[in-house]
Length: 328
Image (cartoon, rainbow, N blue to C red):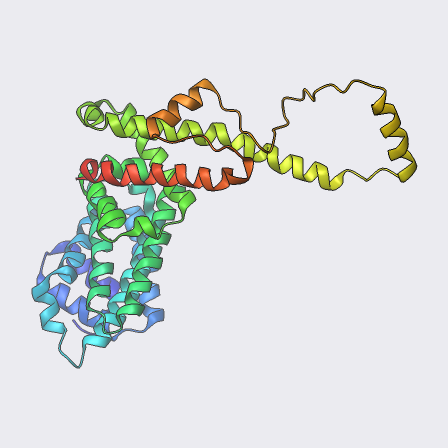
């Protein structure tokens, strides 16, 4: 059996849930080349795409075997530990990028959310037992960041949130593995908006929505303020550009202009798109939202970028506190 290919061994596992097959498959993973491993995951990706009802549960069996403490003890002998870590790191990385991320179309298929959860768990288990912890940690962080970005871009975050295993996986990623502090801010804010819209609209979460009413109040206040105040940031940029592009008048023209203005009553500039650099007008709704957040409007445009950043952070922090409850 040890002479058979990886894909043949996996096909055996589709017919019989046998830990001996899992053990043989693991041994082959430990002793195969990277090119053979990539070839295996390429074929596996196509098989899962064509037969999800067969290969999702089969992969669950094998990944669960790899995650199991007793199975690791059999292979994690001192002289094999580093090889195990390297081989399983290569395998799980290839599995996530080539098999899971290329089959997001099956996200609503029974068991897919649990398979994702188990793959992420294995990725971080490998990191935890790595002899070179910094290297393992970096691999886990970078792979999880890439995976989370793919979830957003593929539009399957909503599907995972509605699946118990998917929610458990997201909770592990964001909070237990602390990826909320590593994921790009723009991507995290996108995810927060998606989750908020889903929780608010989904009727089966009515009780959850009531318990999270305070978070929604803060979330909506932050979102409204960000949309409202960002327009002043754009106005400031336009003013700076216009000032740079405006040519300076000739000396004779300046003298003529000064003489003309001395005989003319100056009128205030009434262009509504211009904003005084020493003040920042806000609407009544903005004032209400600021009151909800317990914040005061910035008095100068120069501090607006930092103020917007603070609102974004408030949005993230409120999500962190409230979603731990929801994602459980």
